[in-house]
Length: 239
Image (cartoon, rainbow, N blue to C red; front, side):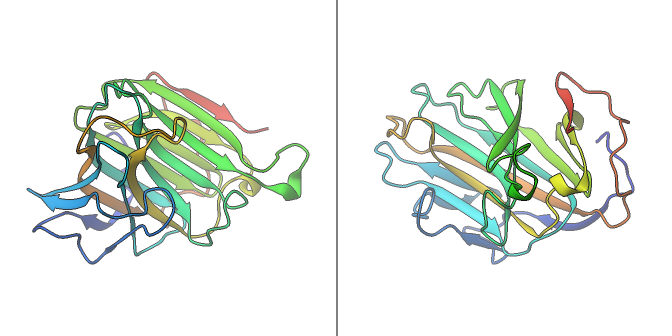
């Protein structure tokens, strides 16, 4: 991987056996909350939906972190009807969204999985009217998400950098007031595409995760200097 080796690996989540490891908690209630689509087999966590949209799946880590690096090794099944999608994200423990920032590491809303979006939802009302609740910064990268990939994000006090397969694809840099500074869970979810809200005719398609790594950012600098060469993505600097 082409990142700074000073990151310290603190957790390596794998999925042995046939049940969800104790370090993870299924979502309950709301979107992705039925839990019926969660299974583990062959060393892979499967988060799936059915042909009528009556079940979907989401899990989160029991642990939470402020700053660090996360790597998620995953594949996403294609959906010819374009009605389902995965999300890999960091979600605030406080649940105070959108006032607390949501960091979407990968969302493949295209049924072909022909691109992935990295998104930051933030809503700092204390600095309005420049930034209003749930303002979104988005970058999309064209690639084949149905193949195995490693999605990653680095989060430090003044910036967020997104990676795919060891290459940085997007970087958001700005004042510390615009970067989350509170604990976040890692969430993995798959279900109906929130932009369509309709069931898919595909059966048992989903997000398949083989490994999740978490790195401690305590030894990293407090900023993210422009030291990256973007690989097909963009760098956005907040102003």
